[in-house]
Length: 228
Length: 228
DNA sequence: CATTGTGAAAGGTTTCACAGCC
DNA sequence: GGCTGTGAAACCTTTCACAATG
Image (cartoon, rainbow over all chains, first blue to last red; front, side):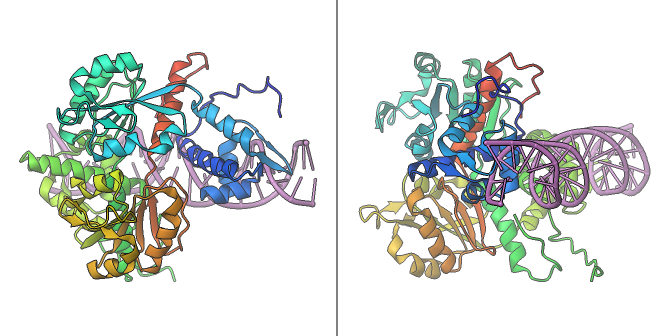
């Protein structure tokens, strides 16, 4: 394995487009690891991740050079390097706000745990739900938000609540010192600049599909450019 | 033959980046409509959508010119034009595969219905779940997939199933003639080129947050570029 | 000698300034 | 006067070809 005192391997700037794909490579590497495969070429890994191989090599080049020319990449080593670059080796403690179907689905989602994200709290406003058990978690009252966040040393939060209360809860999270927030609420949230907010919008994706399907239906628009 | 510029206003090619934001503008316009606001400037609408105003104007310019200089946009009219451009005025009939927490969350998600996506079927493999009611839907057996898709005239599908069975079900959907698929399964799926597949990956988003949070924690990396 | 790592070109996206129009 | 619509510049991303190398 390469020496220790190379380029500061940790965190140079990774372009956003690249960053999003690195997480996909991680997933593919984990599958290979599970199958007991030890070495992989950029071509094979790119196939498994659904991208082309020059793109994959370019993406990896932002982290450092972790392959061997003429040979390929060591699956386990590359897996560790990407995890480290993304910060997945740190201790991430996640609170989920909203214990509806979505919140419960997220609480039980194995993809989080397998990446080192520990779900440490689950909140709901409904008194009938507070106190019930979801997996190994007990649902906390949203009234106790600040206290529970502190006690559990939460450093990330997921909003799985109705649009109407999302901004208010977001504000409380920020006031409580949380600066990494993932929102599933279908509404634009305002946060101060030091807070990282990301959004997952489930209906946006269906709407994009509708656009492409509509175009496919109408065969009268001249040369059709490859969609996606 | 490069000739024939028949520029129909309906569906010229919309750049992907623009397309994704148009759905956000729609949401913002719907909020304005609900508040009874009839006219909006590019500046106001851009604020509501969380983008800057030249970007919004550029995005709208791919559809046509639907504003009035010196005045702004008519909320209802612009709403209709964007909906039409995205194909939301057509009849979308969606099947959800997987009636776990995620599938049920999606089945009950009001954002779908309000955009004209009708959920017409919900499938599960578990015999204990098949036949039960979720909202106004009765859960169908995945064994009857093809028959139910045909009977309900489904033209879009959502995969909310475990990674292990996602590819197999995806293949059956494609064989049954579905060519618009949204997957929540954390796995790379293979589809033929005529099929539009989109993916929502919930752990990718947390991983991107982790990367930025890690960088914010380490103040020792020289000039820090503003994240996001 | 197969395969990585990377400059350079091509293609796509965002920003900007301002012409055009009500 | 005020706001939209858009070409042109700046910036970012992807592709490509090939030099570098174990």
